[in-house]
Image 1: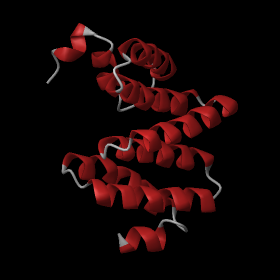
Image 2: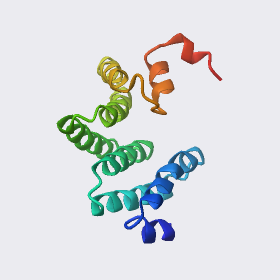
Image 3: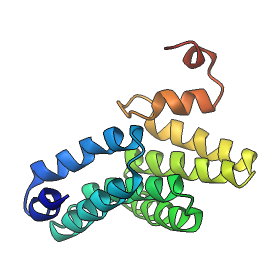
Length: 149
């Protein structure tokens, strides 16, 4: 944590390391540390005026809020990312935000709205190397995804 806070604001490599640590910490249930790392990444992205890194950090922060049960905060972060991505024409980030927002809608029992968001996310991300694509396809009921290990 100390290294992330010390170096993230001045190093793009540190930002990449923070981003790479997300799945590792998530799989291990280390959500508090994940939140702190994301806050460091967000501050660094803003300090560097890196809109793409900021969008990734906000999307990851929304995911952390979601995992911690903070739905209002997660929805707020998703809205910010989505608005910025659409205004910049950044389809990749828009797709990530819509995927996360769909998860929130599903938790609220709004499955129809969630499916709409996931379809829109898939349209944005199809043909990319987004790590969420297999999960997104499974959410949309793609039978080929449910048979993969």
